[in-house]
Image (cartoon, rainbow, N blue to C red; front, side, top):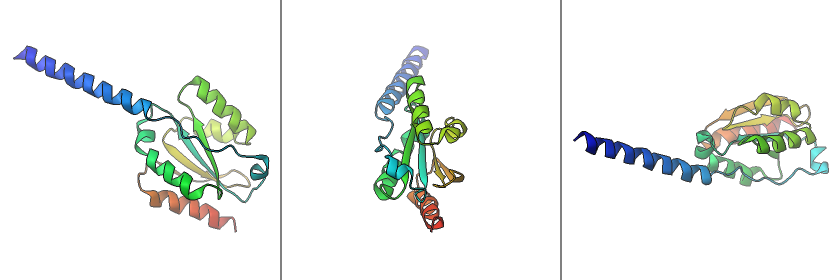
Length: 151
């Protein structure tokens, strides 16, 4: 009886580990188009920054929300993804943050995976952040608010 329970328990652990591996593999950092110099200098566009890690469970759960943000707001805001999955991706994200003038924001937010930050386009001040919401209306409210505030 105990042996049978141990076998079930071991099987459940293996199944959970396999699911974790599959989710990890299926959770790459979203790719957003690079911000060109003209867009970079357009201070009227807010920044919408996703802090992502491949191993982050919140990032896995909110992947579809970010896809909606991208498709809805591409060309209207400056979309940025900071990938902090490992040291190499973190270094690359830090370098991109420096190029965009977001080095301080990277230092402040890089540890908060699964969070989307909305920053003012002119002074890069934090307007709001959304952590782990699976309700697109939360993102819409935050980003639309930033867009209307610029006018």
